[in-house]
Length: 499
Ligand code: ATP
Image (tube, rainbow, N blue to C red):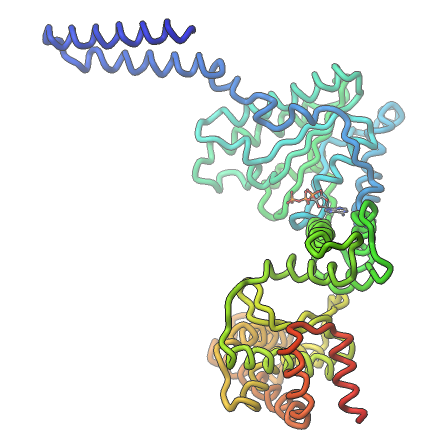
């Protein structure tokens, strides 16, 4: 409708309303139908009604309905996940052969794992590998206030996938649904369960309908961080019957991912990606990609043409702990932080030589200073290893007490960690209590935890009081230089010992 026509209509409607009021007609008789008419007109003029609102552009699939360029070679680590997915995809790739053998086509693959581990990349690579068109959506896009909208969106998505494949003359389509747990939680568990049930039922119907009778085969690849929240109907054979675990990468995986993302970046000769991989335990692929990007920004800020190891170290800290904060500490506070961190570092080095990666008194985010430890992946811990972990945690507070006479609130997080480790000892049956049940009375648990931590504090007090001179020297150097690499710290500690 032209703008001038809208204005004339609106003006006429207002004039009519005023006249009607002047004649003394009941306003309710006029306003209710008028409101209904306006709402209807709005819905029609906006996007052609409720269902048509779910356009490809809104779904975010408009541009992504062709075959993506991502290949499995661009995904680092995840060897097992890649192998499992590739195996599942042979069914799609060689569908005439599998059909001949009467093998039921695969309808869904569920990728389960923490954020940023490459689930979206895997789905794209799967589309590339099978020459399928690729459409992406997120579970939250289907769930609306109005019952029935989600279900119609699911229908549209499958329809779109088939038409895109036909248009591009492909035999198959891959629909990627991120956050499937939002769309497919256990039925009847959610407050607005009617809408959830309808949406989920429609997805199941569409997946069941996506069988060999159609020319275009549609495979749904869904991703979630919480497979335990999913409705069991989704996991029934014939639906998402392939569940692929996509975990955080181990050291070799991290190195592979770093190599992939460093390929387009100039690295200095001193760079050891292997060292960075060993210092980044717990990082996802997305963290590692971000790390290399931050390192490049750091080199740019420093006016360097190539990325140096120091840039990568700085980036590790930024990704791990956030940007440097401009909090100004008082001199005594800075000194206390330095002793606290050197305490942690000395004990870490004594209980596990070579474990300190960095010590710093530069505040970042909420930390006033910190040490970073290089850790290998470890899945099982002995009692001794857990006790040594507690020793490193309490070393900061004990150091403050030894040098400055009193502890401070700065150790609160360390104590929390020590308590968690002590509880792990107790519930693994490694404490003097032996095997305990999970409903151990809280007073007994408290006593056991305190006993374990106190004993480690005593051991640490002994270790550190023998080394107070070294500690003072290293702390003074740290205050001067602000940050120290693990290597420099070890040289200082060992040099002092040797002399
Ligand atoms: P989310 O669960 O948050 O959706 P995701 O598991 O789908 O995350 P992706 O979106 O695939 O993670 O990854 C985000 C980015 O992180 C990728 O674009 C890529 O740059 C990087 N990345 C993640 N994992 C890997 C990997 N295994 N190899 C290479 N790069 C990776």
